[in-house]
Length: 102
Length: 140
Image (cartoon, rainbow over all chains, first blue to last red; front, side, top):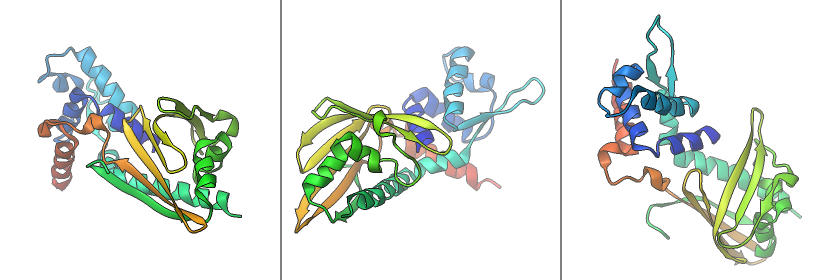
């Protein structure tokens, strides 16, 4: 749940949503990601860093290139977020039931 | 019910609303169950300021991490309804308690999505991201 919280918080920003949408179409470097935006590469790097820390994006090294890739499995989990919430709460209420048992 | 709310859980508990309320609103009660089966909540980590605008916070200690969770009470109606927000996600949870014989019917509702993700611009919303993802995953 914790990384989902972070992922939702990360996607609260329109630039980061746009970056995720772009990466859904394939890998891209920070330079390539920055092209459509009126933002510096440093600013894009910062946003990519936020997306990396919450597990939505990973970055690897290929010589001098550092392409970013969307971690599809993490994004897919966001799609089943309601299911996650139900699971968390049902587990919590199981524990509550035991706690309240006479 | 607010539109867009999701029914998350319904449970009949074999305890009167006053005991269920205490479990949700006292440090010892919260510590006893909030972590579920996967995490523990140290009782000394729980703080409760039980009033609208007050905060409750706790540490969950799981196999790999210790996290501080913070929530802010939106409304406190003892012993039948508790509404709280999680500022980090913007997620609002409503816990409703109804007496049922010698027990309690408990329901948990949550807003379907944090407001930060409910954007009027469909092209920038989560739905479009998930659509793009689906397209991406369909590629050979």
